[in-house]
Amino acid sequence: MTDASLEEIPTDECYRLLATQEIGRLGVNAEHHPLIFPVNFALDGTTIVIRTRAGTKLAAAEHANVTFEVDEIDRRTRSGWSVLVRGQAEEVGGEHRADLVARTHATGVEPWAPGDAGHWLRLIPHDVTGRRIVPGELPPAVDPRAYL
Image (cartoon, rainbow, N blue to C red):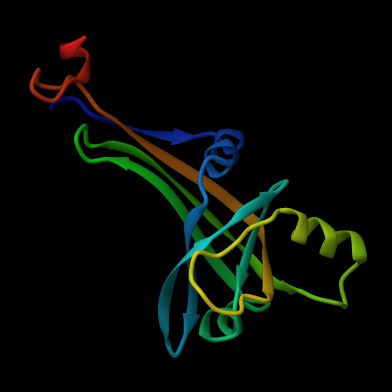
């Protein structure tokens, strides 16, 4: 493979790509170290909604600056994209406006992990960036177009 390129992804396309996925990685600082958690998520406009249970992730994320990452990678062509969201996390509870609570619950996000996931986090983005690796010319053994 030759001449691969790295492209910046515009913010509006970053949100479109986020909407195509349901698993992301939540980065928080806890126990004096950065921790990364795979999580199910959904979008409510430009806000990321995560449903979780009580524990390290929830405690570390509450009212904290967090990072959230989603990607899609094709190992065969060595191409893909990554979207990085930096922002503030907050737990959504009874003290919030009823419409915010209703919108959060309406996303329908359901965690894959078993257990009581009765807590909802919203990540309010401050910065959204993305990058895409575009493959160059692929050898015929790898290029899917060679078999059409």
